[in-house]
Image 1: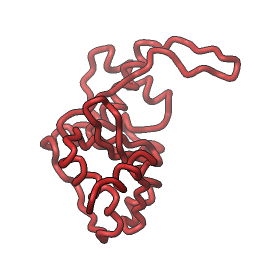
Image 2 (image 1 turned 90 degrees about the vertical axis):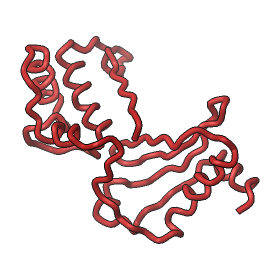
Image 3 (image 1 turned 45 degrees about the vertical axis):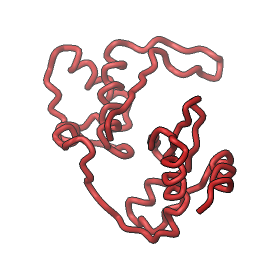
Image 4 (image 1 turned 180 degrees about the horizontal axis):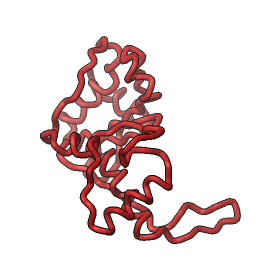
Length: 173
C-alpha cells in the first residue's frame, strides 16, 4: 500500500426525521483515530478492549477526548500496525487460481490498457478491488463476506462489476 485517504464527516448521518447534528471535536478526533486504524490495515472491529478499533461510540469519543487533551496514543493495536513497513504482508492465505481469476484478468487488462491501480476499499462485510482509466471511470471486482474469509480463505468469491465484465469480454485472454 502506498497511501490511504481517510474521510471523516463533521456531522452525524441524518436521522429518520432528516436531521443531523454536528460532531464534537472529541468525536471527530476519535473517529479519525479509528479510521486511521483501518487505513493501517485493521480489518473489522472488536466488541471490547483497550483499542480505538472498538465499535462503541462512547469509547471512540473517550479516545478522541484523550487525544484532544494531548495524551499519548497508547493503543497497542494501532502502534503495532503503525510499526509495520508500508506494504508489509501480515498473512498470506493461498487459494486456487480459479478463485482469483476475475481480479487476475482485470490486473492483466489494466496493464495493457494503462489503467491506474489497484485501489482497494474494504468495509466490515465486503470489499472492492478496482482500477481507474484516465477519465476516472472505475473497473472493479467486489470481494464478498470478508469476515468469513479470515477463517476460510477458500470461500473467496470475487464478483466482477457489470462494466468490468464487459471490459474483460473485450480483452483477449
